Image 1: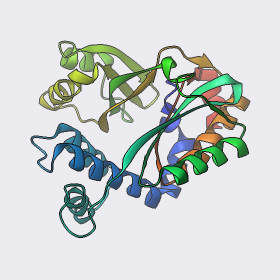
Image 2: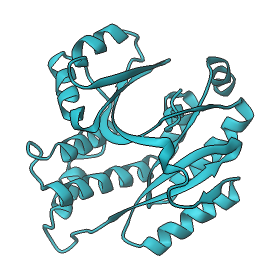
Image 3: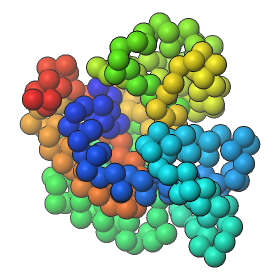
Image 4: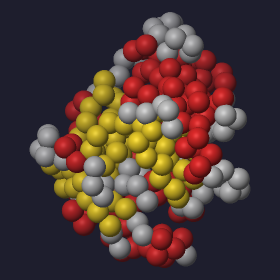
Length: 252
């Protein structure tokens, strides 16, 4: 199980997602706004915006909300937005490295909320650069396989020529890792092969993962949940992994 929040494929995380749907919508909308601000409002000419919109649609964000977010991000209307990306580094229980990616219009608020979540849930802030070297930016494509109809060979055949680095297999999903520059080509190849995907975006993947036991995993989940409760936190990446046995314990 990959460290960058791949516990999202477990029943535990699915229940949390249901409970936090409104907050999840807000973060998906923010992603759209930022993508439109940086690359323009044309989905065909802005692959980052295209992928942000597709991810929002997969999460059932209403089309009207998506359209308004694109316009706001593009500077259309009185409520145009301007966010900055801020990265914080830290450690979770078990010595697990954390990267916390924020999108915020208030740097001081974001820093305070991240620090509070860390100190109250067994985490520790780290100096810039002391954790980031554990991660590399990659293209990450999530493919759901809840019905078991897709094989790793199917995915490999579709994207092998498009910068494929690794395919990670989980109980109900796959994770395709590519170089960021190959993300659009790999995603397009999946579409052409008739394979649906949940999300395709650039993210941070750990270079080395630390296996943790169930007790430590629960503490890490608690910390990640607290961080994600902040509206400013968009993504949390961590370099831990779970064995099948630990995953089974957590699902009980």
